[in-house]
Structures are given as structure tokens and as C-alpha cells.
Length: 297
Image (cartoon, rainbow, N blue to C red; front, top):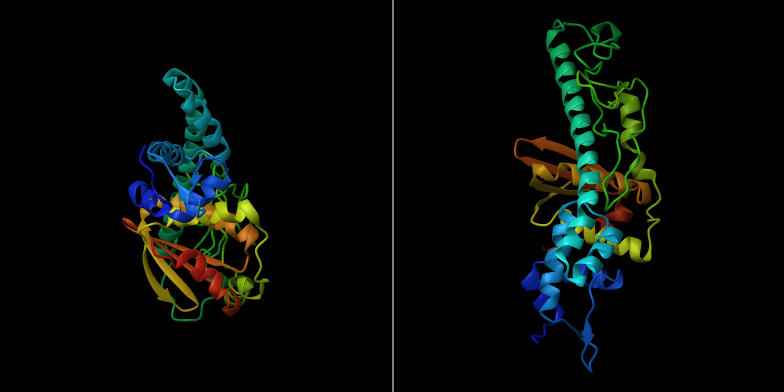
């Protein structure tokens, strides 16, 4: 039987060594040990990691993957099929809900933009009569100015539980032209208020409520989600450029991360086929930001 060290398995499978260690602690992957204490893996590990990766691609939680791996190891394909089908159906239903919400959010932004373009250009200073924040203005949105932290409410997928909904702010507008769950668009009520909202991460304590397996799992999930990203420094943080099809996963992870590490500031910008994720942290959290996001894939 072929034996591989952890670095060799990481190269063969494309799974980082940090993730392999986490999988071992989570009971998804077993390893032998040399007399010197080095981990050793057989050829079975490559197939197992491919199966785990396929299951994660479907949005299954690690607990579910552990159950599924047990069925897979029993060797009966029909049992794997029977176990997997209801799990995929549940993920599909969740994805369809999120797709409808994102479509409604897109409609609300288009409506806000159309309303903004229809307003006359005035030589004077902006005031409430400009109508930028007029409730109900535009098709499906009352927003002329949308907060950078506007979020789509809805259930998170398997691996990372996200908030059940976004937190409505003053002047939140819900809904779009499509029949879907309400989508909250948090409006910027004014320059001063927007500035206060944008500075909360600076004063949050630099501490994470996750520990142990939870911390290892979140780290592994982030590193998988941003694998292959192009990185660039921005003031107080990093910009990661990724394929736009990762937007749902990135948004869910960012929402979950702010639950445990509110000192991180996340900003997402969609640019055609690209997703730009900017992550910032106060000076005391710079080392944590670098350790989590500025890594070599």
C-alpha cells in the first residue's frame, strides 16, 4: 500500500495540510503514525478526500459529510444514493430561495438606479426634497443610496450557519418585483450616520468567540472559499479577487464571521465575472487578518 506524508497527500489531493489536520480532528480522515510521529496516509485517503470535496461542493455540513462517508465506506452505491438524494433536495430548495432573494435585491437596486437617474439635476445642496431616500421611490426600492453592508436575508447553507436575516436599519426597504421573501436594503440615512455605522468594526473588541474545532473549521472553510484569490493590499486590510460564482459562499462566511469576530469589516463588490472582497481590521487585529486571509494557497 502506498504511504504518503501529509505534504505529499496535500499535493496529490489539492487539499491544504491545515485542512487535512482539521479533517482528522473532525473524524473525517484517519492517519497512521511513523515511530517519529509523522502522519502517514494510504492511497485510500485520495479517494476519501475526493468524496469529501464533492460533498462539500454540494453545500453539505461536515456532520452530514461524516454520516455520508460512513455510508460510502460500506460500499453499496444504492445506499449512498438513497442517503444523498434528500440532502441534495434540501440544499436545492435553499438555493432556489436565495436565488429568488438575490433576484429581488437586484430588482430593488435597478429600481433605485432608475429613480436616481429620473431625478432632475439641481444646482443647490441636496436635501430631503431631492427624493433620494423617498419611501417607495423606484421600481421595487426606495433607495437612492445603499449601504455597503446591505444584505439579503434568508437561511444559510450547511457548512456555515449564517444569520437568519439581515438587521433592518432605519429606512429599510423590503421586496422587489418578484414574488420572494423580503430583501432588506439598508439605506444610508445621512453622511454622519453612515460614518458611525462604518466605524463600528474599529471599536469592536479584537477577540473571537470561536475556539477549538469551531475555529479550525471556520479557518479551513475560509481558506477553501478564497483559494486561488488574487490579493492586493488596501488601507487597513486586503482585497481578494475571486470568481463571481463564489459570492453566496463568501457572503455567508462573512456574515457568520461577524457574529464571532465583529472587528472584521467586509465589503463585497461585484464586477462582471469578478468578485472583489475587501477585508479590514483595526491595527490590533491586523495579525489575525493576515493569518486568516493573506496565506499562500
